[in-house]
Amino acid sequence: MSGSSTSLRLLADAVLILHVGVVLFVVGGLLLVIVGNLRGWRWVNALWFRLAHLAAIAVVVAEAWLGLVCPLTTLEMWLRAQAGTTTYGGGFIEHWLQRLLYWDAPAWVFVLGYTLFGLLVVASWWIFPPRPLRGGRRHASPSTENAVMADHTSDDHEVLNVRVFAVPRARLFEAWTDPAQLARWWGPKGFRNSFEAFEPSPGGHWRYVMHGPDGADYPNHSVFVELLPNERIVFDHLGDHLYRLTASFADAPGGTELRFHMRFEKAHDAALRGFILGANEQNLDRLQAVLDGTA
Image (cartoon, rainbow, N blue to C red):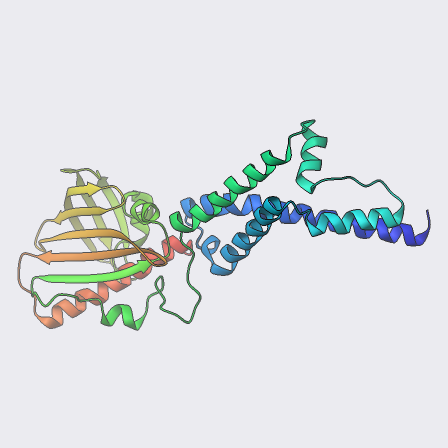
């Protein structure tokens, strides 16, 4: 075999490897989006990644409906023909399915399969929305805007913090109801938690000790009032500091909006409510870190 033929064959093999990578990206990309969102991998919702994946499957579906052979397949076959080696006809996936599975399917089967897979990718954008590019509104990151716009009520018995997290509602709800995760983020910056009882169901008790950065321990006791999966959590905090906390989850552009609403038995002046708002923002910062996998 001449040097020229060897080079052409190696180039054809390189195109083949690239083609395999594209196929793995298309198929594995959807799996990454699903598994990553369930496990809280925030990077799988990066807009550049989701757009590249959507574009890749769109090209595949378009080629199938138009009856076109992938340009990578055409290039590989041309290189192999120039090198004087064996080529194959049809599409890339059809060829390797037939070779590996010994299954000779008609073309419409692949058109249908590509189309259904493409629809799954489109559905994933609705179920697991991508994160917006930086530069627009930062839904998932703590910001001055979040702090300033946190208090949406003038009632001196209430405090309301609102933030959007770039995760599905199910993932955010899980961070509230899984004690291992909740213990890592509950409370302002510098606090740790030791849970003694955690019964996330109506009437269930939540007993825990918050360990402050100053070394002091703060026992807490709450009783759950309502848990509506992926929608709402309500509990009453007992003891000297009586309040009802309602955490509401709703779909929002870029993820899930959390409304962190506290209603106190006693009235609080503006200064105290401002202090609580800031402490709650630290709480939500820590929640963000858990969702990001950095805590």
